Length: 465
Picture (spheres, rainbow, N blue to C red):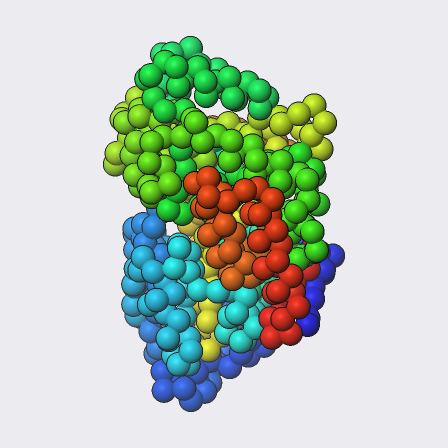
């Protein structure tokens, strides 16, 4: 099995001053019929070798952000410099269903936003050499300021987290901040205070329940990622960031460790405070209930405000708070957040116009492209300084403030992008846990067993951080 280390990742993320590799350092582009096509020579005006005689096919996940940002911002920006380039824009709610056969058949599109419940397995795509090396993009001049390289204007952590075996393959574009979301209007009208300790959180749930004005808590029961994310964040807060590192590294006993089980029990014990029917609700139903003041709190990422913009009362007052302190012995302080680049964009190594796919990402990683994206969809990106002079909505401003306050106390996990079968097991087991159909110990042992199976499978390429 091949492994890459966190040191390798960080070295890749921070190296500077490298010469711009030629485009043919990537996999050779192929035509739609599968035969190789000659790479386009690069130049100062076309640094990534965009071919104007071949279309650029773009596929965007049609989820919380929609696809208007691509159609109305990034694609017109690209056309402003490459007027002759034909862009074939597509949107899909199930990316894997639409594109997996294309990748398997050797006729993939150039650029894909691979997100959503039906996303493709990125680890498997890397293993099959399907994803282009993004080093030429990162070493190209930035779109706004040619005196800087693209890598100089991007959060280096995002480069590291999108690297496999030290090679950047994925641009996780959105800097997602996770937390517990609430309405400032509802809280202020009822005198409810943001809890700082777990005891305060449980007391708040009890107060809300007794008031009869709303259910205290909910999550998307049909999509348990929302709650397993919260469990793992609390586990890291209790036991330290290495709790998640051990999980990512498929270490034996990582899922049965006490901090993980303590966190799982803490959320499983919220059964009396859940919105009725939570186990059968999806994210739209729970978020709609939230907007209707039927439930007071729910866990989500910082895309929530934009996703609900058409259903949210004008005076709702979206805001979020970090997970409360579980106990005085927590390894990480109050304010610790799960903050992680997400919404992965990839360029197919076997597409017919690789250079155009890379150039599309160069547009996205500009201050203009990222800043306009932030204003449109109300979420942060990995581009440095992109929010300067931009107007932020209340929820996004709350998330940005929490992220600033967290400083270095942020945590993340990668197993769900590295090993989709493991994520599938976590989703299934967590759904049963929260529905009261699986005990905490059985939940932990079941997932740990799956992790061990994956680690021992010689056909699976594993990674280390």
